[in-house]
Amino acid sequence: MWRLLASIILFSCLFVYSSSLGESEVTCSGIVPLRYRNDKISITDYGGVGDGRTVNTKAFRAAIYRIQHLKRRGGTLLYIPPGVYLTESFNLTSHMTLYLAKGAVIKAVQDTRNWPLIDPLPSYGRGRELPGGRYMSFIHGDGLHDVVITGQNGTIDGQGEVWWNLWRSRTLKYTRPNLIEFKDSKEIIISNVIFQNSPFWNIHPVYCSEVVIHHVTILAPQDSPNTDGIDPDSSVNVCIEDSYISTGDDLVAIKSGWDQYGIAYGRPSSNITIRRITGSSPFAGIAIGSETSGGIKNIVAEHITLSNMGVGVNIKTNIGRGGYIKNIKISNVYVDTAKYGIKIAGDTGDHPDANYNPNALPVVKGIHIKNVWGVNIRKAGSIQGLKGSPFTGICLSEINLHGSLNTYRTWKCSDVIGTSLKVSPSPCSELRTTGGSDFCSSAF
Ligand SMILES: *[C@@H]1O[C@H](CO)[C@@H](O)[C@H](O)[C@H]1NC(C)=O
Ligand SMILES: *[C@@H]1O[C@H](CO)[C@@H](O)[C@H](O)[C@H]1NC(C)=O
Ligand SMILES: *[C@@H]1O[C@H](CO)[C@@H](O)[C@H](O)[C@H]1NC(C)=O
Image (cartoon, rainbow, N blue to C red; front, side):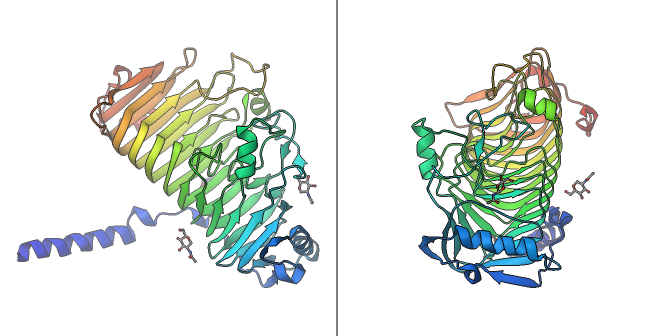
């Protein structure tokens, strides 16, 4: 009895010790300093009414115009008090904090006809869904620096239903708006905000650097089309941590442009860390691609907890993409219930137009996936490289993907070269060459 008690106490002490000093405290959120703003204004000073009916577009534009033109030293905080503030889309400006109090909701109008259009991204050549321009994101930032969106877990609500229905009935005219997009911007922090019902992707930093997204909650129904959680795109030095994401598409998907347009623009995504993310989706938990044309490298994803998934980890690209996926390290992933545990595929996604170069084959090299524990996984894994560009340096270690009775207990592989250690079910022969203890690093 006493021995049992002693070992329980010892065990709990070790646990407290390891969780307070251990890996769980590692963070990258300090890469952007959090600045204190002396100057504070409230949306109500600019005519904002949080009754859920008044359209507050003028109030948001006037408040942000004031921040942009008065240029107070240290920037300005725009306070959104409790209440529901309906508004059309608006642009942010540099040196500002958008602060949502507890109970504050910034809600998008559902007027899809007068929603502003902007140019397509050069690395996509057209809207992601349809040719031509694209609808501006609900909250937009272009060419900015030093912007914070934070508060006490207020909500930014895209009311996406009307957009999802246009998509379902195939009557969309242009590509749907993201909930938030930052383009050509740097030093961005997004924290302690709830994002819900985005018309399309939720948070889209594109051509950005120094971006921190942490302690956010992102929610959209499981059947909502293309409601990706966070999509860092042709961006560098991005830190995504401590968030819960449950949507209708990939939870976090790293991208870098689309076929010939992405190759010509040539902007990689690199140095991106994804840590302590929990969530659920009919698509992927951690996704790389499929738009990989500017290249994607130096990515770390760790401590990821997933349930009811399509795919746990999904690396995806296609012919015509060019570019590369290099030096990807994914570890400590727990998946409860998924169609696939791990899927790496060279045949995913569509093309912007018929002018893509079928000889532009992406290079996929140096993928290390370690410590994955799955239960109720229907198919363990599939790694399908490209005939003309086999995937190399694929290294799997300490992976256990448990299935239920009538499931496929095999891996499917083709055009792949790699190694594996302690993988169950036993991987395909292409990966069955094991080496020493640090055999994976030799794969890079
Ligand atoms: C990569 O990101 C980390 C934080 O995640 C940062 O400390 C480091 O300086 C970045 N590396 C480069 C080369 O910018
Ligand atoms: C918002 O930014 C977009 C993209 O930079 C620009 O096209 C648009 O005119 C801006 N809208 C307003 C109201 O300033
Ligand atoms: C807001 O939500 C985050 C993520 O769930 C949580 O860590 C944080 O404590 C919450 N903050 C407040 C002020 O409620």
